[in-house]
Length: 198
Image (cartoon, rainbow, N blue to C red):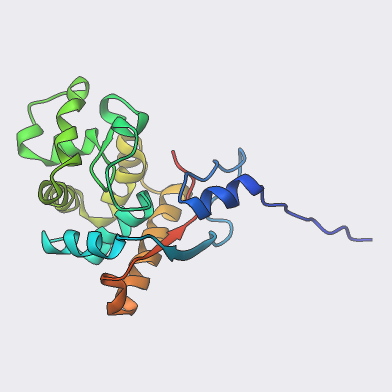
């Protein structure tokens, strides 16, 4: 007799997804690439204006997708440093980590891990936030940039993990939704994919 395996999705995870909050980490040993991640869309008032603001300072649909995956409103109003310090601290609407920022942005190049407070300048300057993102993407190329953006120095050293692939696939899925319909570049639709926060 075969037994059916029933997987129950925790209510907390569903609530977190609907509210745009962080998704609980997968169980130890679980592979994020084992099955397609949950995904969808909902409306965030004012998001269309924010999308247009990002595009106006040189952002691309890939940039919109990264910011959209990271926060509800594509803003930097999350806890300072994203609750992290040193090279792991994140800044700006894309949650760029300090390790990559200080290597890609010339005026941060003389700074070390303990100087992460300088990265907070990106939280209030959208133009420089987008510029810094493009500088990092140019320095590492898209594939390696995804690895470092997802998992910092560790990701740059080991870019081939299933977690990094799942993160990249999530961003690319969101970008595909934006590219498929020009209205999505100015409406209040937020696309999301269930990617555990790290």
